[in-house]
Length: 319
Figure 1 (spheres, rainbow, N blue to C red):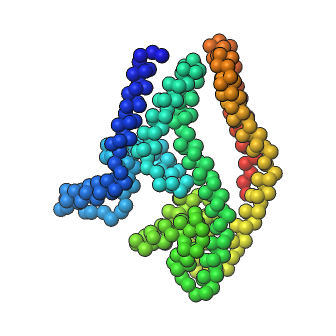
Figure 2 (tube, rainbow, N blue to C red):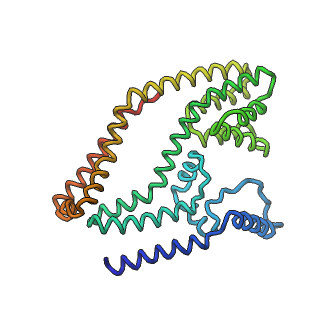
Figure 3 (spheres, one colour):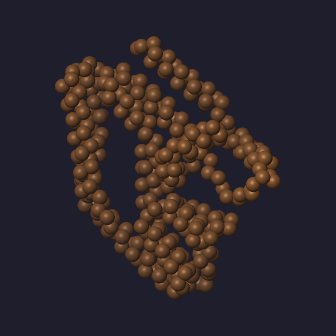
């Protein structure tokens, strides 16, 4: 191991340990934010009009928050965190991804002596939290799709019983299981804080960009602007949602073999590579030291990516 790599590893580990012990607790963060708000209000009093809009804070550290807000992909990553239902902050997530990338890069350079593959492994490990968020988002969206027809039926029954739109939205938030209940509770809280119904529904649509939620939002907003029997519209919307859910279930059954094939293509080569290296570390070392072996690895990765994209295109059927 070269001294430069060892020094870089020790520097990263030392920075991680110091950051772990000096990281403020949740209570300290809340107190710090309150004090910062008071100081900012005092500084801006008499100079500019105060705002009651909530400011999205990406990190409790101001300079890190400014850096993260300057990243082009910060808005997309913040939306991904919101859609996955997590309460993560961008600051710890970015720090973890950076440290994980450096450590994985160094470990991969000791096992795979390749100038191109080692950084790719480091970047892949650094992006693993994003992949985890994507998986959580897909699981959450499927749960919402399964619970949303029940919520729409509850809204239709509440409207027939004489309740208003705001009351039935609050009823769904209290009676339906999460994550549908939590989304409707957040929408009700935003309305109670003064946000118009249209903006609250559009915010929920931004957090849950599903076609079924778009149908529901369109039905409520259209009835609010033009009038009509909203209970009857919601009954039709619920039947459409159930039919779409039935078709999606059938498509998952029909495409199960293709999806399993895609997962096998993704993970089995890497699992076999790890098992072979555990039993005999030098068995595949020639593959990364010989130029022909490196070309074979690059070609295999490219063909694997093309195969996964083709399988994804085949099994992705819009309903």
